[in-house]
Image (cartoon, rainbow, N blue to C red):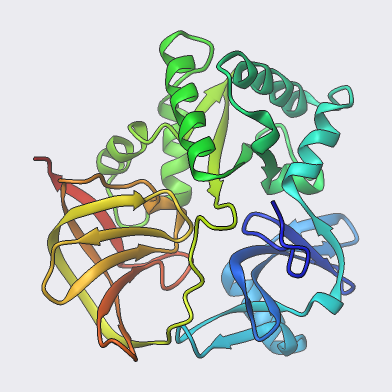
Length: 319
């Protein structure tokens, strides 16, 4: 599953000697480095999760070697050289370790139970991994369970299993409280009503005994293309269009081919808009326009920053 020469995949965590844990966000190398974002710093009280602004400030002030300006994407993120990595946290390895031992807390007990539900609905559990706070044993009683599914077919099989298990009562849809919590963390520019409508139909999240879990897809080799083209920002645009291809709607980044004379793709780098729209649906989108320097073709980026302020994808009409 992993390329031995560059074994880093999105949803992995990488740890450096300074006591930093970065979340990997890119399949490809960036000048030989791992594309990522700083998520945790080590303190006397243990690992502390930090936001994007604090992470950028900390690195700019004391560790500029981890800041990266991508000439390819005309974007800033973080990047770590493999020689600076002291530990590589791999979701599929950690999931197996947790499942092979007795649960150490309530969240791990629920993970064991969730795994049993997946087995019941014939999910290929060898394609699953565990990311988020549980990947580094930092979960709390209020934590979510963040699962990784490796492979597009396996991911959609897992989504179907979640839908069936909810229908048959083994799992639950997000209740009002869990949806509101999800909304407050991720909604961005959508109203609660808009956000909830989109979320409920994705089947990439549900609840087990009151704990939310999420499934995210990581593509296998051959399921994604390395984008070697360079892009330049061209300002912002808000417009209505129709989705004509949603094959990569749950990828990272999510890609929607749209019917527009100027922009042929809407690309989302924020999890909120993964799986957001389907073929034939009319959507309203707002984001940053990028121009391919070779072809001249433009695309719209939703999630040019992690918080995606002012950027969104929402369905406004179904065919």
